[in-house]
Length: 253
Length: 318
Image (cartoon, rainbow over all chains, first blue to last red; front, side):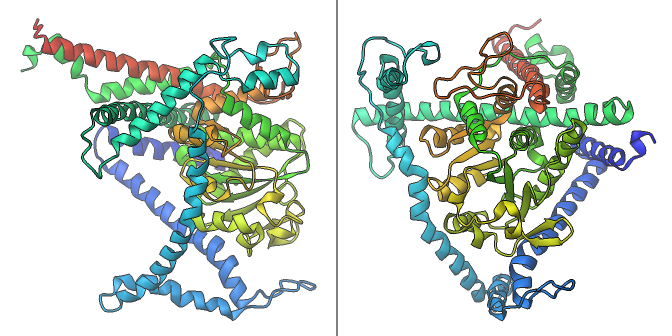
């Protein structure tokens, strides 16, 4: 059977149609694009609903509440625990946000979620930034002048002890890097001093430099974003030309 | 008027459809002619590979698969490379998703394709239930990962997967999850993601289990912070990270090839073997050279646009 008539062939062909349909908006807004956009949204919404029931509600809540009947001889099944029903009215209260009269009820589950969320924040903040703040404390003065730059450890024939000792040194190039890093942190932080009018020339200069350093950082992030977008396009082209045209149409996989 | 356009104006007013067609050509043609791009793996990629290779055969790792087809260009290749390493080393995986409802299905499809590849190469199948379990999707990533910090068993309570001959069965009856209660019972947690689930994981599990990431290029800079401050043990970022990983799978680290050359050197590790002769190439080898052509086109377009603007402003009419 030709690959295009197999299940995989039909699936890939439909995927190509959808890809071309969605990219057709680059030419101009059209019905072909709208069809596939709505199809995609409908599929995603339907899949999400199903997944939330199957994965999040049925096993971890419904089955635990009503119990599971034995499917065959020897299967112990499972007893239900009706205490789980308490979760149902709490969850339904969230939907009261759509009622003008009873929307106060929605604040109860929202309050619970906010409370749980807030309680986690101290630990989250420390876990995220604690080590990063500690890592900011870098030595800015060299501890050795034996070499101005960091030696290439990979090519050094040293004993493990000597290698560890060499690694523990701060070389001039490292000290300069650390200084630039520390200076960047301080300057960028000074840019966010909004609570008072900074009259000191030093603070104003640091703040101005901080703004440029931030822009350099954003530029680097934007650059990696562009690379990622290109990769997504390349993947679509691979899908069309290799997975469909080469493998399905030309049958050359 | 069209006739009054200067050369600078013409350079700045190329129809966008023409640019799109040129871009499609630049991102399509090189796919048919993959070339090897000289590469030096990043330290973060070497650390990821070393940590994956340090997990003992028969052990079980946690694998958060939080990507879907929307980031397939980067994430599928990363997932395939990580899974190939785990499969070849006989490491089991507990796969869960907190990023997207589609993620578990996408991961299962990817494993199915890898199994076809393994069977064709006369390698043992990576079996569901015996080698990996799919715990499925959790709609609240923050609460789930927070729960995992206390008890993996409680977080995965009520989750089922297909056991051979038994149908849907509690995941904790799987041999690979026997006796595992806490996150510390797992030697490694790998997060393959195209969303903020990597941040959620660090926020709640940092210090409790070694964490490694495979993230998209957009997330590379912020993930670098976690790596520099040793909150994660290694990571692969975007296509470059994937290309690194595929190269490391071929060459290993401090691992001499047949002619005695060591391709990738690192003073942090002893010899770590690769998998020469096996299928290590994938999206990385296909896409990375193509990306260079696309970026080259982008730079060219920026230069042309700037030259056009300069000529227009300097009033150089023909």
